[in-house]
Length: 392
Ligand code: NAD
Ligand code: ZN
Image (cartoon, rainbow, N blue to C red; front, top):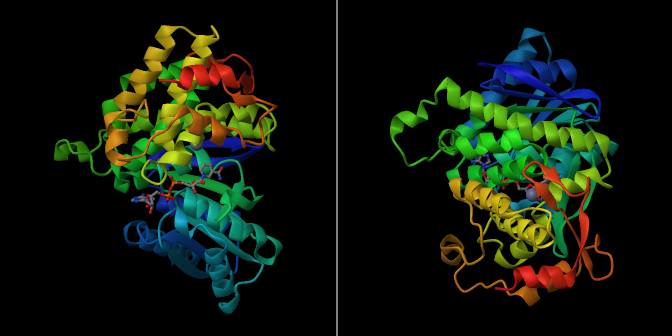
C-alpha cells in the first residue's frame, strides 16, 4: 500500500488519498464514527468488483475491537436513471424495515451517482446520519465527493432536490480506478484538466507530458498486458495529478462553501459544456461535453484579448492527448451521437435559462493564461460575443 496523503476541507482533515487501502479505510471509519450499523451503498457494476472486500474489511475491523455493529449493503442498478426520489424512498424503507437507527452510518462506495444519492439519503434519514464517501470513479474523486453537495434528479431536471451534507471523511483509493473503463476514466480527466487550466500551470504541464502513463491506470487500456503492472512511477504521477486537483477543489470549497464566487471558477468549460450536454446526452458523457466547452470558452477569452493562440493550442492538444473531443464536429462525437447537431441558436437557447445569467449576459470563466483566470470568479459575457464564437 502507498502511504496516504491527507487533504483538509473546511478546516478539518477530510480527504485521505492512497492506493490499496481497504483495511485502513475500514479501521478508520469505525474509529472516526462508532455506529450500531454500517450501510454500504453501491451499484451492480461495482458490487462484484469491490463490495465484498470492503464488507470483509469492516467485519474484521469491528471484530478487532470487539464491536457487535452490523454491516449491511444496498446495491442499486447503475447509472443516472436510478438517482431518483423512488430509489431514495426504496433505500429509506429498507433501512427502516431493517431497524437502522440514528446511530447508523452510510458508506457511499461508487461514482457520483452513488455519492449523490446515498449522500442525500444520509442527509435526511432520521434528520441526518453521517456519510463516508468512498469514490470509485475519477470524476467522483476529483469532483463530486468533495464539497458536500448531494442530490437526486426529477423529471423536471437534474440535481433539483438535494441538500448540503458534508461527508464525515472521504477515502480515495486509486486502486479502484484499475477496474474503471477507459472512457469513464477519461471523463474524469476532463475535470482534472479543467482544474489545472484555471489554477496551476505546473499541474497542467504534468498533464501535457504524462498522458500515456496516466491513462495506463484505467481498466481496458488496449496496449500491452504488462502495462497492467503499473510501475510505481506512473502511480506516483497519478497521485500527484489527483492530489493537485483535489487540493484546488478543497481550497475553493473551503473559502466559498455555499458557492458565491471563487467556487464558480470550477465551472470553466461548463456554461457552453452544459448546453452541449443538454443536446448530446446521454450519448456523450459530462466530461466530454465540458472538454468541448473548455475549448469554446477559451476561444471567447481569446476573442476578448485575454489569452493568445498558444493557450488555445495547449488546451486543445492536452484534451486530445487524453482522447477527449474538442469540437461538436469531432469525428468521435458524430459517431457517438449520429444525427444530433448543436446549432448556435439551440445552444444559446439552452444557456438562456441559467439562473446565473444577468440580462442577456452569461456567466463564463475567462482564462487569462494557463493556470490563471481573468477574474477570481466567472465573468459576464454578452450574447453577441458568444454567438460570434459558437458560429461555425
Ligand atoms: P457514475 O456514478 O454513473 O459512474 C460511472 C459508471 O462507472 C457507472 O456505470 C458505474 O457503475 C461505473 N463504475 C464506477 N466505479 C467503477 C469502478 N471502480 N470500476 C468499474 N466500474 C465502475 O458516474 P460519475 O461520472 O462517477 O458521476 C456522475 C454523477 O455525479 C452525476 O449524477 C452528477 O450529477 C454527479 N455530480 C455531482 C457533483 C456534486 O458536487 N455532488 C459534482 C459533479 C457530478
Ligand atoms: Zn463538471
